[in-house]
Length: 176
Image 1 (tube, rainbow, N blue to C red):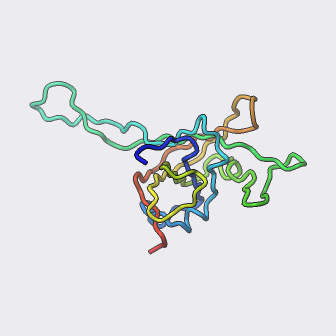
Image 2 (image 1 turned 90 degrees about the vertical axis):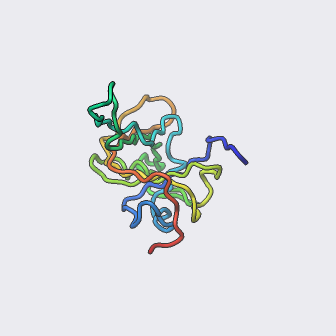
Image 3 (image 1 turned 90 degrees about the horizontal axis):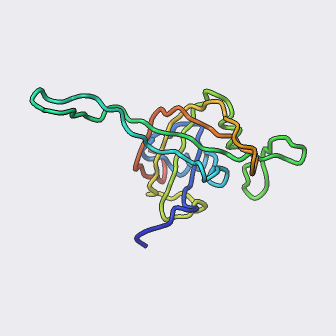
């Protein structure tokens, strides 16, 4: 299968603790996080590296504006759906592995440091993590969740202040 449609193929784990080896998060570390794959709006999911800063680093003999890439940047923006119980309170759990309002609850306070790992391959978003899965990891700090349009489901946009990233990492079976 040389190509795969992206629709329904992004698995996301939201972690409250940094993996011991961020370039090789373990299955246990990823499963200890919140499986956010089915709790985030796909329409505006934007967690990715962004253009790096540039610095002027040209030799005296070079004509023109030659630059080199400096510090990396990243973008962390996503919109979790809200989940409520029959009384209108945030849903704290559910049945059959449902996680309730956990994604919003983890991201609702400004200044919360989190780690997000995403797998986007030919595997479905609902397929379990496996050793060797290619993943990208992002460390970020949350800002205040933003009100979005009042159409569709109740949701809030989360914007993160990028801190660090680990691209083309691989899931490890167990810790060191």
